Amino acid sequence: MCLGNDCPENPERREFLATTAAAVVSLAAFGLSAQERQPPTRVLDAPAITHVSVRFRSGAKEIDGYLARPKAKGKYRPVLVIAGNRITEEYIPNTCAALAVAGYLALAPNIFHLLPDSARTPAEMQKALEGHTDDDFLRDIRAGAEYLTTRADVRAGGMAIIGFCAGGRNAMLYAARYHDIKAVVPYHPGRVTAEEIAMLKAPVQIHCGTADRHVRVEWMRELEATFKKQHTPVEVHLYEGADHGFLAYTRPYYKPDAAQLAWKRTIAFLKRNLR
Image 1 (cartoon, rainbow, N blue to C red):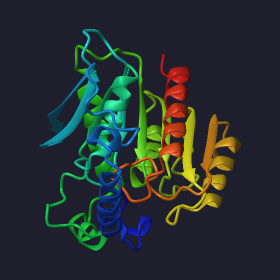
Image 2 (cartoon, one colour):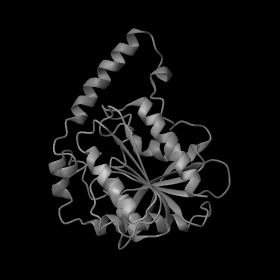
Image 3 (cartoon, rainbow, N blue to C red):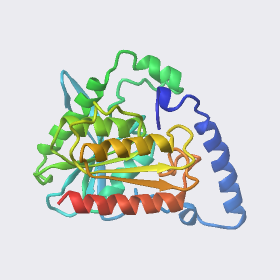
């Protein structure tokens, strides 16, 4: 979900495994089916969409990405999905799938392709990414955006970008640099400076839980004030009692009601700004 200073401590995986095991035992005791146990925001198996792994060039290398779109033939507005960690955790493909359900073509470029499978803790990830800069991340995101423009099923005229944690920060940095972005949706984003986002003019919709242990609500209010000062349209939505990663059903802090409301707002925001 996040790296480095975004997650100074990361007990999430251990807690998630324990919480999930307890939940499955509890649900099984009541005789609930696998379908009934499925998180309400999981749509990976939606019959009207298709999703696949893709590869494209980024500078001198080739990187991978995860793409989802409606099955029906046509051209669709594109949305970039920027993870704060590996794109293999199911909530990232599911985010792409949820966008496809809503009628978009979504791509999650693997901007963490340098991470070896052996790097699991934030410290190990930071070491593996030592020397990797914002420009390196943005170059891979740009490669994904350029790949989308080559596809016959993508409608021209701009795209949106959604990011989580460090990916939310990268989404804002990218939108400040590349003005083909028409809408920006950061979920509990890492911090940015006023200078870094000074050129971001596309509408921004921010989502964050009030109980987020890694991203402070006051930081989101400061970000809101910065955008308003530079006349960037901005919305900030706070979710009472929600912690970091509340949209990700693969995480122990998944909060279904907040996740459903946040996603409803996200899709409405995209419909208003990505026509």
